Every structure is written in structure tokens, then in C-alpha cells.
Image (cartoon, rainbow, N blue to C red; front, side, top):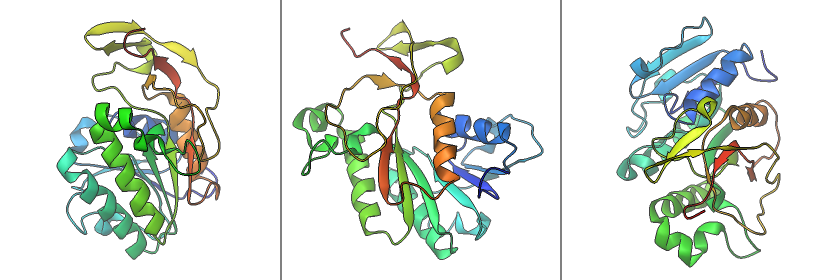
Length: 237
């Protein structure tokens, strides 16, 4: 069992972020409850893995499957209309169950660029990445009022339709792009001095970072950002 994790509950377990987290946890022999709308998408067979169908957008749905000593990671991405309800319902269920800690994932948009602004406050970001900016702002403002101990792990954007990190390629604006290895930590504090908008894909590196953070009482009520280990260049490069 890893650190203080008795059971890792991964919300959004079948997605581009959630599935690598599930795989990384199982590789460490951690017991995992994989929560998603369609558990059939998870084909992994492991004695430490349990899957359950939960619609996080429905109030109280998650509460039924949680244990008080669970460690919860929220990395679900729903449709724009249900993302806010899914996020808030998850926090509500965790708090009602008496769980003291939740880790959730986001993008570097929520990192501070100075004492007054976060990346999502920039006009170009609001214009070109409106949905991401709106979601990151919602999460930041909501968690600031939450009573829970939370940590947001940020790692850029996941490209829809990306191939697996093992292939080292991604389909980027209709073209296959070779990915570049980049494993250095981006930042360990809630600050980004020069935000760059390379588009990142999920990788084993960041999946393990998420578990590292979840297994320790670190970065409580903080945002931390890491490079994913693999990235595709910005459009036009």
C-alpha cells in the first residue's frame, strides 16, 4: 500500500487523465475504485481494481460508493454543461463522507502569473480558450471557499484525440506530430512567471506525480504544476 492511501478513488477513471492514474496506482499495488459513467471502457484486469458506474453530475451519486478513509482524485472532464455540477458534487460527497483530502487536476491556466492575476485572466486566453478558462476559474473560486484540504495538480491541456504517450505522436490540428521528451518539473509552487502554451498530453510521469501528491499531506490548499514528460509544439511551430 502506498503511503497513507488505503483505497484510491479515481473520478473520471476511463478518461485521458484518469486511466493513466488508475494504471500507475495499480503498478504500485494500490487498491483502486475506478469511478466513471461507462466502466466497460476500462478493460484492465487486476485484483486491486474495482469499477463502478456513477454519474457525477447527479447530486449524491458518489456518496454511496465512498468510504471515510478513501483518498479521492478528481480528474473527470464532462461536457461543458455538467462539468461544474460534477466538480461541486464530488467535493460535497467527499465532505459529507468525512474524507479530509481531495486531489483534483486542472491546467496551467489556474496558476498565478503575478500577485493579482492567474493565466485564465489574460485576454488572449479568455478569447482563444474560453471553455478551459471558464472551467479553471470555476474550480479556483469554488475551492477557495471549500472547507476541505485540497490540492490542484496542473499540467497543461490534454489534446482531444491524442494517441497514447507510448506512440510518441499526437494528432495536432489534423497532422501527426512527433512528441518531445521533457521530464523536468515545471513548478512546485502556485506561481508561473512566464506561462507558455505548448499543448500537453497525459503521460506516466504526471500520473505518478498525482499519486505522489495524493499519498502525502503536501501542498494543502495549493496549486502545483508539473511538466507532463511529453509535449507537442504550439500551433504554427
